[in-house]
Amino acid sequence: MTEKPAEKTEVKLEIGRFGKFLQDNGIKSKRQSDSNNVETIVIDAKDLEPAMRLLKTSSETTLNFLLCVSGVDYADKIDSVYHLWSYEHNDALVIKVELPKNNMTNTQTPCMSSISNFWPAANWHERETYDLVGIRYLKHPYLRRILNPWDWEGHPLRRDYKQLIDALNDKNPHSFR
Amino acid sequence: MNEPLKILNQSNELVSPELSDTVTLTTLDKAIDMLSTIVSPIANLARSNSVWPLTFGTSCCAIEMMCVGMSAFDISRFGSEVFRATPRQADLILTAGTITRKMASALITLYEQLPEPKYVIAMGACTITGGMFNDSYSVVQGVDRLIPVDVYLPGCPPRPEAILDALLKLQQKIRTENYAKRRLKGYDQRPVRYVDYDSGRPMEDLLAMAMEETKEVLTKQDNDNTK
Ligand code: SF4
Image 1 (tube, rainbow over the protein chains, first blue to last red):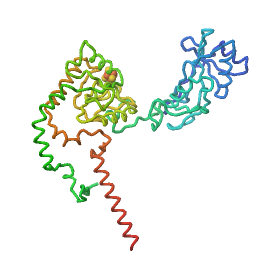
Image 2 (cartoon, rainbow over the protein chains, first blue to last red):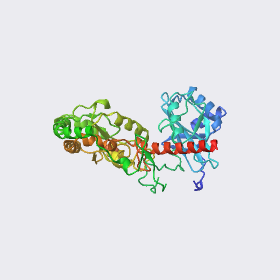
Image 3 (cartoon, rainbow over the protein chains, first blue to last red):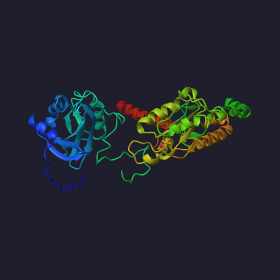
Image 4 (cartoon, rainbow over the protein chains, first blue to last red):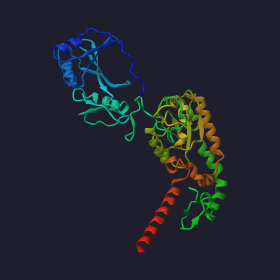
């Protein structure tokens, strides 16, 4: 995409509860505005595994339930988003990992580490994110397309995805896609 | 592509492309034709009143298909109450629901597994044009791109009465059929796997052409080698 990322009006947000917890354990994080009153933090890709292990096992947080893994394609970066939940404390946290695009083409995929060894539930979620947004999760046991046929080209929810026009799909080739 | 196409028939004679589609009637065919004019009306009456649909529902339209089988609308009044779970025992596919690209090959396989005579009702906007998912990357824009369709049944979803109406239309169509004619038209009953979409020609013809070309190339190579 050619569009420029919008000028950000940086509002300095106070460090949140979970951000503070991670900071105390030596993991840096950046707070973003809350999503649905749930604390949202951004962390580095290399910090993901230790942070997840801490948040899951520590008795202070016990965020031991993974709600969902998803991906978002922005103009300049691709986000991998994790929603965590704690039944003990009735608490939730959203973790984002930003992967810069750096003039990446449609078929290239950014890489980051998988968390399917912590939560088996992440297995299919990561496969779906790989299929539709195209984030390659390293160390995933079976990273294959899950929704689209195995021989699909490209990742349909990317901003620059060009839809295939062929015998099965050619009614309105000029429409907005 | 301007040069005339060369196609061989079974006894290896060259036939022109116009002739490749015509059908020669043998005496056996004529006998069957004559017989079928007598038998067809009776057989058709039996057939049209026992069209067994396949249990094939891929999304919301299938709910209406279930509804039409229940007692409020009761499709069994028209002899179609036996929804079969295997294509080998069914006569009709009601394509109830969106067909995605991943489902397309399965639908073609199911259609091929139906024994003749087989019929298709394209049920709902999704299976006629792609419906509201027309713009989607994964949806086939109409099942008539995959398999031949007998009755189009628009609606999103169509009311159960509409399904009954489509079934009655199909029964009318079946009653006008002639067995021998249908057999000769076997070509039209083919799913798209056998027809090249770009040229609209059956795959056998294309294969024959390709074989012919290969043969030419090989003989030319042989000639070159012997020189
Ligand atoms: S036509 Fe409408 S009701 Fe039927 S499958 Fe499509 S969206 Fe669902």
